[in-house]
Length: 141
Image 1 (spheres, one colour):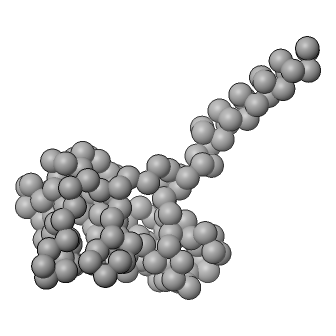
Image 2 (spheres, helix red, strand yellow; image 1 turned 90 degrees about the vertical axis):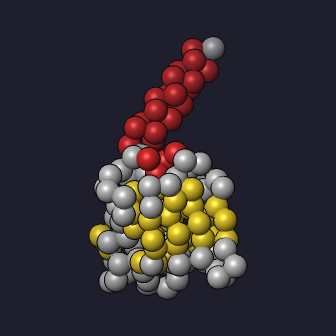
């Protein structure tokens, strides 16, 4: 019985350590109320995607061609966003959010939240995508 409770405490402590250190991938925030327009651009409503109300907020979505994209809030300015393509610039694998940065599952390249390369083997930043922002929405593409 003593071993069972020790195992439970050990499991709990290890689980807390993993969460504290950020070793688990961040929850992917799928954009709500994203609309693909007739011209292929994507409209993201800020009111329906509350993560974008604060700096560092991220939503992920696909555009009309199936590309995986993310919209990152970089400042409180109306145009304080960066739209990035989530394909790693090393070999094209889809990067994922982990510990507040983008990480490539293929070769562990790391990118800052805004897409700037931090650790290779990738040598180039994640590609940006053009966007237009107003107080209520961001149009990507």
